[in-house]
Length: 316
Image (cartoon, rainbow, N blue to C red; front, side, top):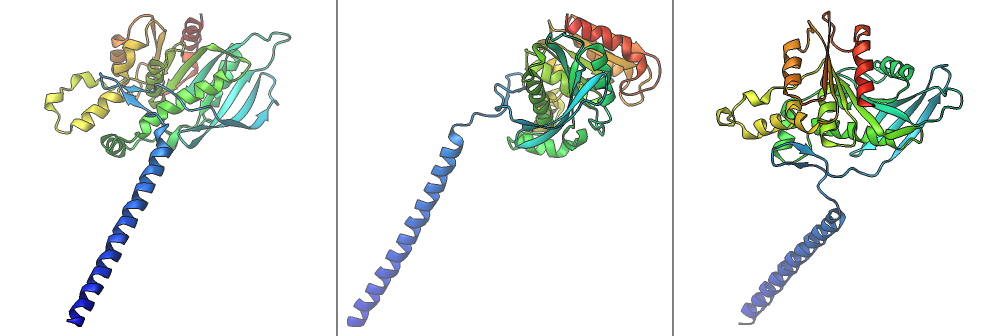
């Protein structure tokens, strides 16, 4: 009888220990959940999708950047090497100003330059120098992964509600415009987007999202013509929805009445001329399409007149 009572006492003690351990585990879990909730409760969704399935950034993070170097050794322009924060990443950029012309201190129009895939900010800096000669400031950035795209990974992120890299590239462009706007030499009401090839696609989307951007120039670029696909014919709905969200063609309507400029080589070997023309035809006025002879992909000297007149229209 005493032995049975002793066993019952041990069983009760074991039960209480297990019960207390469970309670402790639940308590710790609730504390962690509470901490997580406190940490994140004040944060809004960083990106949203519209009813039409398009990307939107209602708000952007507080601007945070540092000037790494200043090069004023060139007679026609000054270059600042700037690193700015964008979604916890550091984006490296070159900010170029025309050299001061006497006492002229009027605020400058400025351009965000988005290089094509595989093109560094240094490779594209000659375009910044050209713009400085026209009287414009500019910022050219190193795109994430130098513009390389992993479509399968982006679709996986999108499917799981995470921010795809291509969305982040658009966001980086928007943050670059904020860097420009923060410079005292810049006219914040006159900032344009300019992108080449893949960068042109991000430039179009960014301009559509931010109506404070004055206009956009797309060089050797085009949309994806996603309208030619039918949702009913697609097996992977998430992949289809993502495709819709990154197609510049779907953002064209909201660019008007701001100027939309495209410049393309007639025999471009990377993005066919007909693809660019199809995108241009979908856009609204005011718009300009500049055609040059040759097979070049990206900016060439023959595009200069179209670029000059296009930017003049944007900043008029």
